[in-house]
Amino acid sequence: MTQPRPHHPLATAAAWLLICALATVALILTTPAWGKILWLIAAAAALRAAVKYARPAARHASRRTGPQRAALVRLRGEVTASTADRTRRQLTDALATRPTALGIDMSKVELLTSDGAMAFLTAALLAREQGIAVTVRNASPQARAIMHTLGLDRLQHYRDG
Image (cartoon, rainbow, N blue to C red; front, side):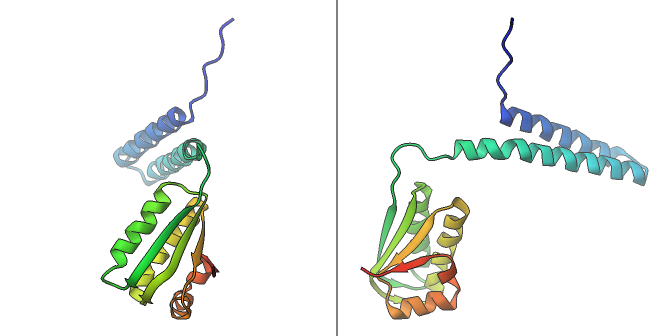
């Protein structure tokens, strides 16, 4: 008795994408409007099926392996428009390691402007997408006010000490 072949979700998703592409070509080549509508529905259904099979495979591939740890980024100096790119890069590089949580230590930040705080918005949205909690530590009252004005307090937590 032969054993069934293992199910490969990405291969199934690729097959559905091929069907979607073929339906799209048929859509382009079909003249009557009702035919175009049918092919469009077929392409959309195939694309939906492809996403359905690819999504669990992508989740499985992105699961964290190894020891779970939090990342800590220590910022210093001024976080302004001129340093926002560097700050954004520091935060997104820390998130790229797929930590369990991201801590941002602002005890040595002298000034935070709204332009500089946009780096936090980028990182906070990326962290939310990945399910990573963000905690800002030791932020000055001025920095907290800027982040509150931008609505960042809904995306991250604050902690002193």
